Image 1 (spheres, rainbow, N blue to C red):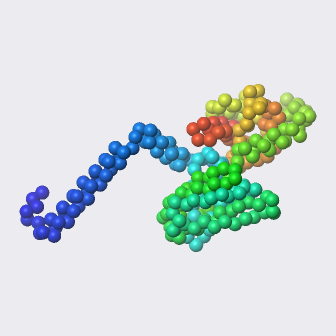
Image 2 (image 1 turned 30 degrees about the vertical axis):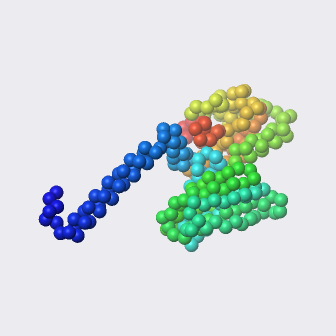
Image 3 (image 1 turned 90 degrees about the horizontal axis):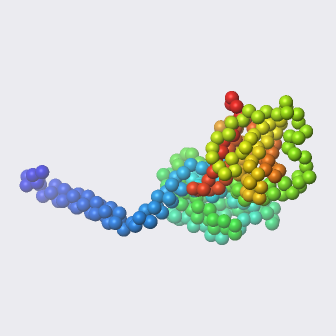
Length: 281
């Protein structure tokens, strides 16, 4: 470009623009040089964890339920509305740390009877189009949550499902049902339906699934005894729902006639998932 014919002010603007572009490129190059291979790997792992889609279910009371530890939950809030993030009953909050403390406000609230109270974090953004992160440390665990603000859309109630709680409940039920009969033993073979398809890979992948018309029986390899059973989500109306079930040795007994379901164990890179589908559905 011939700059000799440009007015002085135009030359000055062009010079500043070129300097800015060059400075940005140098800064970007310097940043790339500053990040080691291990640091880049760590950044990539963190990015995948933050951006991975996890299971989101609907509670009976309209609550949006995340499976704790699977991914970083993303909670959407809106100005002039409140997001209620409910923690586990009896869990004591130690600290609440928010990346943007100026435009995001977090206030505590409680519900329930004394001794089993649940702490609620009431989240309010000041304007739309914001993204920040929040870390909540408690007496039991640490929550890493992403917060987003939208002009009109928001999640009114948010909660968590805890895999260790499911295991504890199953262990209690198993102890009380130890003397019960084998599932389906009092039902004739003609009444049982084995028309289920099983897909997915896992060390505990069910060996067979069948139903007596009222309950569904999911049989696992015998090696699952003494291990944490996977969490069962039943697919109904396009939503993943948790229903009542219990373990009897290597058998999962579901108090529901299942058409579609998902079994999940582990979190992050170690997660294993198996899908169950009734034939022809």
